[in-house]
Every structure is written in C-alpha cells, then in structure tokens.
Picture (cartoon, rainbow, N blue to C red):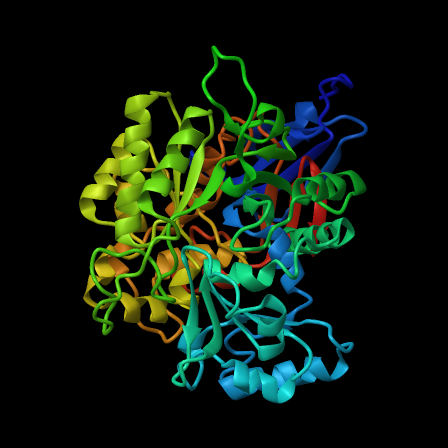
Length: 553
C-alpha cells in the first residue's frame, strides 16, 4: 500500500521473534522504526502500510529481538581502564605464584618507576587461598610500585615501593579502612576498604583523554554484549579513585562519538556539598548550581547519588548481624559511623535526590532501610525509588519493608557463578538469606539487573543465565529456591532496570513511542535450554534506531 513520506518508517525489522517484555512474545512479528523511536509492532505483513520508497526492510529470518539490555549498576570507566591492566581473573591465574609471574612479566617491560597495575584476582580461588603479600611482589618488582585490585573492589595489595610512596605507616588510616598486618606485625601489603585511599590518590585523577578512551573502550564491549544503557555507580570516584572531571569525560566521549550507549551517571556522595541558598529554602545538598537526580537528556543524565554503607561478602567486610562462618568476632563493619551514614541519606533525600546505597550485609541493609524510612517520615516525597545496591543478605521482614517503602534492590546475577562459592563459604548456614531475587520479586518489588562490572563479567546474558540456574563455578547449587524464570530475569535487565532509573516511559520494552534500543539474538532466551542461556549470541545491537554493532543478521 502506498504511504506518504511522513508516515513511512525508516526501518522495518520483519520476520522476527519479538519479545517486547510486558506482553506476550510475537512469534514471527514485525517492528517499525522512525528516526529513534518505535512506531509500530505487529504480526508479519501487518506493517506494509508503513513501508515507503526509502524504507529499509530487514528480514531477520526468525531471529529473536529483545529490548536493549540495561545494566543498572556498573563501573564503566573503571572497566575500560581494566582492559589495559594485568589480567588476574580466575582461570587466567590460579595461584599466588602465577600472580607474581604475571607481575614480573609486566614489570620487566615497564618504564623505571612506573606503576604496575593488575586487576581481578580472587583469593578464594587461588591455590593458596590467600592474598599475595608485598614481600612476594617485591621479589619481582623492587623499584616499580605495584597495585593489585581484588575482584570485589574492596581490597588491593601493594608492594613496598607503593607503600613508600603512600607513606603507609606514617599517615593516618581513613575511617572505614584497615591496613592489614602480617605475622611479623608489619603491613602485609593488603589494604581493606577505605584504606585503599592511601594509595589510589597517587593514581588519580587520570587525564581527560585517558578517561574518554576508557569510556569508549568499555562502550565498544557493551555494544557487542547487547547493552544499550547502563548506570554508572559512582561518578567522581569511589574508594579513593577520585575523578573530578569524570562527568566532563562522559560529555566529551558522547560529543566525539566514543560513547555509543546511554548512561545514567550516579555521582558519588563525596561530590555533593552544601551550597548557598535563600533563607526560605531548605539547606541544599547538591552538585554545583543545585543539580540533582534527573538532570540531563536521553543519552547522559544524573541518576541516584551513590553512598557506601559497608563492604563485601567474599572479603568478609559486609556489616552483618551474625559473625562470618568460621570467624568468631568478625561480623564485618560499616564504612562510616551509622549516624554519619544516616545523615548523608537524609540530606540527599531532603534535597531531591534518588539515593542508591551500597549495602551487602543484612545489618547494613536493615540500617539503610531505617534511614530511608526516617527520611520519608520527616520529608515525605512520592515515588522516591531509593535503591539498595547489591542487597546481598536480606531478612524476610526487611523484604516487606522494602516493598512498603518502594525501595528497589539492585543485585548482580553473575555473582552467583563467579564468586558464589566464596559467598557461600562466608555466610555458611545463612545462605538462604543471600541474594534473594525470587523472594524480592514475589513481594512485588521490581528487581533491577546489573553486573557491578569489572567485579565480574558483565554480559547480561551471563547474568540472566545465573539468575535462572543458580550454580556456582564449582557446579554447586547456590540458592535454588531463589531461581527465577528466564522471562523474569530478562525483565530484570530491561523493564526493571529502566524503572530503577525513572526511564520506564522511554525504554525497557518494545512498545510504540519508546526508544528504538534493541538487541538481535541468535536464540530466544525464554525458550532455550536453561543451561544454554549464557551461550546465546548477540548478532546486532541497535541504539536510537541505528545498528551500532552488527555481527550477522
């Protein structure tokens, strides 16, 4: 049927299995796009009236189309940086000695005095079951400073050259951090939590050009994995990685074309401050000029403010109600006094921010919910959508509180396989309270899917696989009663992640009027065999009506 130029679609994807999320899948349907929006979704042949002389029609031959994946909690710039660091992930290195060998190989070619940085080691998976020591690193790099990032991000190990530059032993250890001691009573090289600031300030800030390149390198990977949107958890720097020009880097990466995915920037609470105001106004806790959650456009905007409450499960630094398994007296700790944590949450809430608090231990989760509840009682606001990042351990009554307060949990499915064995060992008999995705969803809570990359691999299909299969790297069952269906897991990474960023009107499902952000897959994740979900291939990724990655369609 002829159509006017104004009605013609720019692109029609035909003969595709369309999974819109939020409605039944269309077996062999069609989807029409004009500029950057979806203008029609129908059965095969129903959209002929939208095809004009300039319309491109792509026959997908029965391949699957899903909404673009949205990673609700990642560290994009840090991941891009890690691509150039010494790779220490499990499987790449399996022992402390192999870590030392990898450091030696890089130190041999490094310029004199330059830093050797490694990333991704997990002491729980090393043959020795421990962290490397500074003495072992000194053996192969006596003059070049070395910094090794633990996979959790909550620890690092440094050598003596790095300790000397950081004046460890001379300067005060930041609150919420620990400089670990060896058997001889001297620093072992291991820095826990906020103690990492002692060294990281020597490496940051990075140059604007370096930040832009890191963002671009990450963007390229994300497109290959079907990610069209992500939420950057801690712009400005966390745990000592201060980057005061990071927002400018995202703007430049977008302007120059290096950033090809949409980003919601979650500023670290350290970037907020009290600013001047009229006597009639509440004291604002904001970025300069009063900026807070929601400012920006469809490509770059400010989301929640990021606050740290505690540490990690595999590092046994998360704030718990009971001691970690096999460690009497160790129930973890908060990164700051609870009074200070609550004060920050209340200030941010009062100033209009959506608040996203990193809380992994059950005591931390409960404490954060106390603060969210108090904030709403003192300064009621509709639809705040405050978040708990990770929500690793959670008691049943706190699930009810989350539902009543409208709080959004943001867990990481991929943690189950990559660090699940370490988490299970840390929590012991309390594993049933660990990463309770099914229980949260059953309470009507819109669980958002995320990776926390570079902590673990960030491909959303891997996270969906683990949410469904609930098996650790060793093959052990992790928390099978908390398994969700493939359909539910897909919703976590699409519609729910969009909702967590107040973006549900623009993205998260394939509906008329929404952004044309989508992924073409070589199999339907909702009907594929459960154990093969992680092997499904991404054939193409579209952002704003343009294919920005194409392997084969």
